[in-house]
Length: 361
Image 1 (cartoon, rainbow, N blue to C red):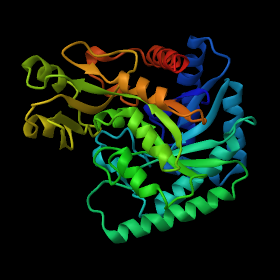
Image 2 (cartoon, one colour):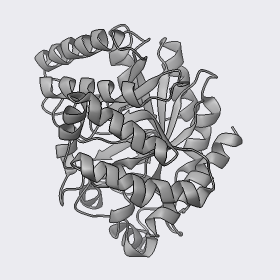
Image 3 (cartoon, one colour):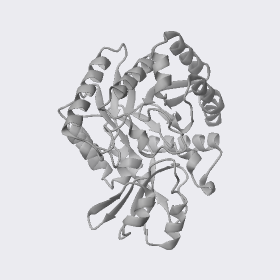
C-alpha cells in the first residue's frame, strides 16, 4: 500500500487561488502538527480548476512547486464532485454530470493531465476516483451504452499518458452501482483492469451492510483491483426505535449532503434515500447505518456509534497489491456542534488514527 493522504474536498475551493490557499492554511499546518516530513493530499479540483490547469503547463508547474515547497505530495485526485461541493444544498447534484455526459469524461481527463504533472517521481501510479455512473434514476439501456463509450474513450486516453493513471469507480448507495457487487458486475469484462478498477469507500461499504472481506474477495476474483481506499466511517444506530437514539441522530439530519440510510432486518436491507426519509419510512426493526462520514478517531457517544470496524476489516482483507489510501471525511463543517473540532487538529488526529490502523493491518 502507498502512503496515506487526506482528501481536500473538506475545503471549499472553486478556483486555483483557493486551492493554493488551502495548502498554507490547512495542509501545511496539518503536516507540522503530525511532525511529518511529507504529507499526502487527495486533491479535489473543481471542474473549472482542472480545466484551467490542464490547459496551462506553467500553472501545473506552479502548483507542483507550491506543493513541494510545503512538503506535500499528491498521488490521487478525487474527481467525484464536479463543482459546488460546498453549496448550501448539494444532495443529488453531486452525481451530475453523469457518465453519460461528455463533460464528465472531459473533467476526468483534465484531472489525469494535472495528476501526471503532480505525481512524485517515485510514484508507481496515480489514481482518480469517480462516481458510480450516476444516480439510479433515470437510467436506461441507452444510458448504459453511452457510459460504456465514454469510459472506453477515457481508458484509451489514459493509456497514452506519460505516467500510469488509474480510474477508480466508487460504488455508493442509491446510485446505478449501489454496492460493490453492482460495480463488479458492471465493470468486469467491460473495462481494462490495468486502467480501471474500484475505489472502496468504507463508509459506503458499511452502509450497504456488506461483508468487507467478501467484498474485497469478489473484486479480486473478478480480475479487478482495489485501486483506492477511501478510509471513512458511517454512523451506526443499534436501536433506531430508542427515543434517545432518534434525538441524537436528528442532529445529523443537515441540508447540504445526501445521507442515504439503510436498515438491516431479517436478512433484508431496507432503503431510504436520505436521513429525513428514514425517520418517516423505515420501521426501525433492525440497526441503521447512515451515509454520514464521521471522523475516524471520534466515535459518537452512545446510543450512536460508528463503523470503524468495517474499515479495519476491509484493510485486513486487501491483497498485497498497492492501493492508495485516502482519509475522506468531508463533513467536518456540517457535523452537529457538539461533535466539531478545530479542523487542523481534527484532521491531524484522524490521520494519526488512520495510520495506526494501517500499521496494524
